[in-house]
Image (cartoon, rainbow, N blue to C red; front, side, top):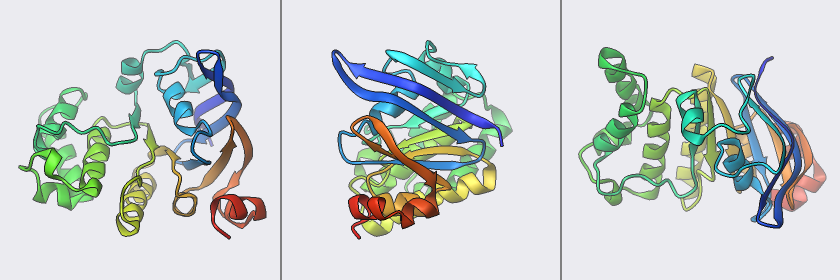
Length: 239
């Protein structure tokens, strides 16, 4: 299976403080991979490094075979690497439909193809169609998360990075959101790298996983194996 993302010996820092220390990991085409760990472990920083928001001190990042260490974030987005950041960051003063229109304007879709894509987003997230004329600040946390993911999917990403999609959501909504993305990946061949503190939920929806502690990968493997790993269960699954 071909890897869509390859990270090798990646070091990221904020000033003199190293946040990611020699991380090596990969995501294959059509695979859902989760990165779990405690707050401050370096998970979100890793995602920011992948999309160019934090420049590497050393190491390499390859996306779709291209070395992207010096690529700009907007270049990566145009070529299929999209991040849904923690906190959703929808345009609060715009309606749901207007938020999707903004995303559409930055995509390569036009005319009938664009209309079909927006229709697909509404089919994936029916609640968004129900609230298409509502200002985004009036949406619930779960609806805002669906809108953030819908905007990202309009860009037709090859690799979608999700940073804490369940944050602030009820357990039921969190499960719905994560399972929607897992199902979309399975149906459309989308590769996903998921950062999630709810380790049990993340592993249940993933093919493989990595465990990060203090900026380093300390465990990796198929999601089912990590769920059965005694140390992972003790530290992250509450058993």
